[in-house]
Length: 339
Image (tube, rainbow, N blue to C red; front, top):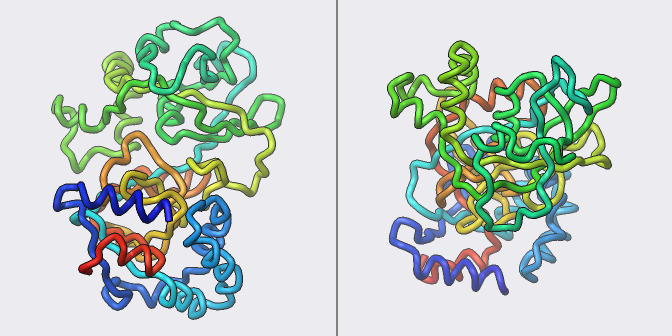
């Protein structure tokens, strides 16, 4: 049971705030109100990639568990236990797949490139910074995948990690994460707060967009305070009704997939989230993605879906609450023998 041993080893050496506590489903707020069937569908999309033998029979049983909300809940109640890792409050944010306008060739309108990963860039290597790349460090080498008409949207495409580009020829180009430049991610929102342009409650994706566009010189310099830079790859075989590709190499599902820190939450595992805030959520999600800013046991980025409406919803999320892993019973108690 490789996953069990890996998680157990991590938690035995982790500080007290990241130890595991096994709980009951009765202790989950809103458990009986959620319909877990969409989560089971998302779970089955990557279930075959869970290599630990403990998951194989559960994947098979999940295929027959989605007949009703009650049978889906019963599946989890019979074979899983909620495990709280770390100390709430959690931090929930949101992300989405933008739909942008672009061109395969540079024009007067479309002049801001997105790049493929340079062949000399190796994993773990620290490469040119964002400001250096924006200044032309790798331009003219044939690495340009497409050209967009808005540098601010290019920046946010990097943050989201995937997108759809409506081309001038009427076709749509899907792009996904292809690598990064090795620099640590720095939050532009936190930098704006530090410099006094905004208070913490004012910072959102929409607020950043608006401020940069209203202050183009200082605004683009502000974006460059995040030295991390994302490279992309074309996704030619992805159907229009499928979500972008997550960290497991499969499409993710709007409002049922989350990005997590895999040091604490195994990729592919179900997760119960209790997100507070203006639009609270109480539902089963599947940990199918990761992100440079997603660090810690109680940290998740919720995938809201594709397009402007999903972007509006995702861009304002910065909420507390808590999240619990839903783990097979033996694995749950192996993580906390005294729980």
